[in-house]
Structures are given as structure tokens and as C-alpha cells.
Amino acid sequence: MTKNKINTDASDTPYINNDNPDLLMDMIAPDTLEDSEEADKKQRAIARREKLETAINTQKNIWGYSSLGIEANKAAMTMLSTKTGMYSRIPLVCKGQHCPYIDTCKLNQYDLLPIGEYCPLETAQIEISMNKYVTEFDISEDDFTDQNILKEIVNLEIMMERCKSLMSKEQNPVIDVITNITETGDEFYHPEVSKAFEVYERCQKQHSSLLSLMNATRKDKAASSAVGSGSSISDIMDVIKNIDSNGGFVDPMKDHKNNTTYVYCDKTDEDFKEPSNQEK
Image (cartoon, rainbow, N blue to C red; front, side, top):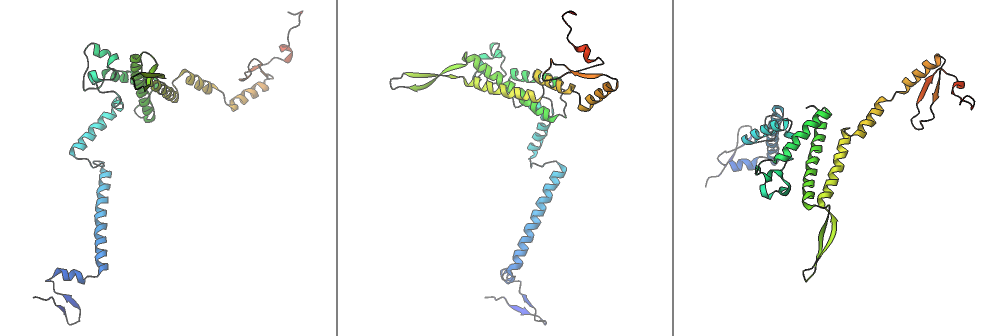
């Protein structure tokens, strides 16, 4: 049996026979091993961090996509950068006779159902609404917030059309709902408002609210016009000073209670007296 020997040189410095590596590891101090492992972990963490920073700086593969994922991401970026790309997830996929709105679908009557593709009725409505809103609101590609609001407006319009399709099928906003069935099979009904009608109402309220945010209704436009046409205090004071310097005065008209209108003239109080009966 071979024994490992610990030898010393002339300076009495111990060294280990390297024939047995296990004995070598046993002779190393535990603190030294922990420091070495911690240093290795640090180096690996630094390498991973540098790899991430490189990916972020180059913007090539920040999400860690595979080769197919990279190409799919490029296609998605192209799709979403187009005018109609932001609406690509709104329309339904045509399911033919299995569509819940098939009873009111005009394309079904003429056998024009592109099964497996986006519903042509909804995509047409999206494109028409989008073009009209973009023109009316004067939205550019840089108006990101307006684009998101417009997306929700169009989405709500599609939802409302779906609700109207279901309501047309039900024929009545109030429907009878089964509340109980007896042991003999008798059914008891209770009238309730159609769920499609309730959803339609909620969508309509949200739709009106978003249109107000876009300043799209007549009421909003009238309010903005009234605010925009108002004169500032400094402008009014300038006019008053000018009239006063010319010997005129300001007379508030009594016919306007809330919004007082001021008439500027150079007449005296005698000119505003009521005429006597003889003068009449």
C-alpha cells in the first residue's frame, strides 16, 4: 500500500505529493475553497450580465427568441406599424355556420363565408371607421395616445354591432329566463333584460366617454368654441381704458343674467331713459 508523504525542503516549507489529488484538496483551507467558488460565481454572473447588455445595446434579440421567433417578431413589428395593424386582433375569425352571429350575417345568404379568415364585415367596418376618424381628428402616426383611444373607440363599435346582431335575433330587449323547474317538468320563467342589451348599453357609455376625450361631440365642440372665444381680463381692461379715455362708458345689459355682455358707447344716461307717454 502506497502512502502519501509530506516532505519538507531546506526551509522546512511543507509540500504535498501530487500523486493523490484528494489529499491535496483536503489540505487546502476551507476559506480558500469558498473564496474560489465565490470568485467563479462572480465571473459567471459578470459574463451573463455582459451578454444581456450586449443584447440590449444591439437590440437584436433582447427577448431571447429562437431564429423562427426573431423572424416572427420582425413580421409582427411590420404588421403593427401599418395603419390597420393595431386593429388586427379585433375582428372575429369566420367560423361559418358555427358563428354566433350567423343568423344575421348577410354574407351567409350569398354563400360568401371565408371560413378561417377574418370576418369581412368587421374588417370593412374597421377600415371605414378608421379612415373617417383619422380624417376627422387629424391623427398622425406620431399621435400615439390618440391612436390608442381611437383603437378603443373602433373596438367598442365592433362590440356594439355584435350586440345588435344578437338583439336582432332575440327580437326583444326583455327575455324570459327559466328560474325553476318542478318535479313534474313545469317551467317557471322570469322576465329579464337581455344580456346583449346590457353589454350594448355599457359599450355605448364607454364609447360616448371616449368620444368626449377626443372632443368629437357637438356639445364638446360648442364648449371648446365658447372657451376659445373668451377674452382675457387684460384685453377687457385695455378696451375699458380706451373707451374711458374717449369719454365713453360701459353699460351692462340687463337681458343677460349669467353671461353679462358689455355695450360700449358714448351716450349719456339721458339717452337710456324710458320715453314718456307723450313721446310714445
